[in-house]
Length: 146
Image (tube, rainbow, N blue to C red; front, side, top):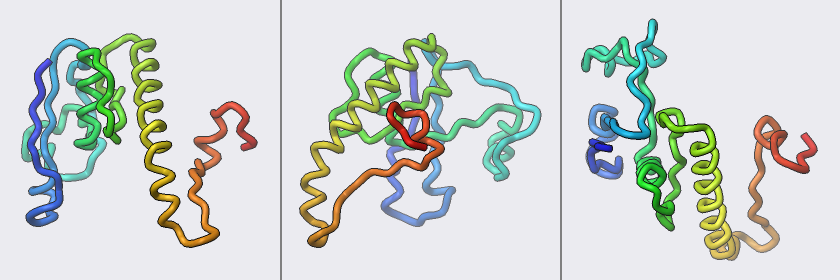
C-alpha cells in the first residue's frame, strides 16, 4: 500500500481551497480500484484541471488517514485519533469493514469517555454535556425510541 498526502493542516496561510485541499492517492492491497463515472458528483474545477472528471472522486478528512492505514496494516487505531475510517475506498470483505468500523467507533467512544468529564467541568453550573443523535441516525440503535 502506498499513499501520498500533503502535511497542510488548514491552520496557516490563506484559507483558499487551492491552498487547503490536498490530493490523496492510495493504491495497493485493500484499496478499491478507480471507478469511472458518467457525470462528476462535484461541481468544481479540480477534476477538470487535473483531467480526472471521468473518475469517481472520494473526499476524506486528513484525520481519516490514520484509521485507514491502521486498519489496512492490522494495528490498533491511534489512541487520540478522531478520524473515521473511509470504508467506501476499501476493497475488502464486508466483515473486515464491519469489524474495522466497530473498532474505530469503540476507540472514539473511549476517547470521548476520557475527555467528557474534563469538558463537563468547564460548563456553567447546571448545564449537562449530552450527545444526541438525530432520529434518522438513532433509529438504528438498540433501544431507540425514534
